[in-house]
Image (cartoon, rainbow, N blue to C red):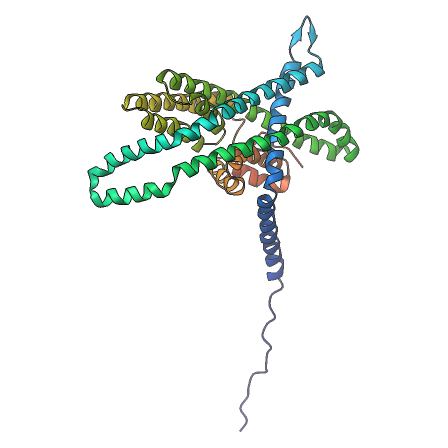
Length: 367
């Protein structure tokens, strides 16, 4: 008797649908890896170039505003507007460099004195919680190496000043390139549709950056001057340095304002024997930061900087990991540029909507 058996069937071949799915994922991972590696390895070139681009945007914004001024019924000549804008920016940089150069050494010399005073304050506070915690805190405090940190900070400031020379070298060439760029776009994109598309993207990025950099610089100057008006009458050491530092930190979203209040408050705590100057600086600088950051800046900015707060924090984390403090300063401008570019491309407009604060994009049209 023969038993009937089903015919042999070969196992099904792997679905070819998996290949089209895995290939884009693989390409995305590989491209992402090389992009991150390139950002880190080329930081020495990209950071000065990015800072120069922001300063160029600030100069361009000042030029456009000066050219709209009428003197005797005539508009300000283009050459005079460019020289005036460049002079304003260079004067601001000169003030920052002068203050840092004059007080950086004094700050480093005062660190050991502050360290001893800080050690005394911590000793009094920790002694309230027991001897074991006291010894642990003493050990942790000694491992902090505040003097070494201050020395490193001073050397970093020196590196910033040397990198600033490269930044200043870029700006004039960018200004010279501004006018010929319009003719180059006409030649590079002869088709009217493509040329109009590129022009919309360029104008969107330019206007967005000019608005952001201009408003942020204005409110940062007010924040620095207001904080200086609080610190100087109290007699805080190196008030000028802390004011400039507050001005620069104000460009870092969220965390910059907090650090700008903490640093002078801690200095007041270790400099004075009483808590009154500490409270004055803490409350005064805190009120200024809150008023400028939550009342004045939103009133000036409106919806021009329509970024999601989560996107701002994620961008801050990413670019700080890539480029350090410089990345933190550049995180918002880079993200603004990215969102504007994505909003003008039909395939990526959904990503721009997700990056925005309320889903409303400044430019709904696009390719």
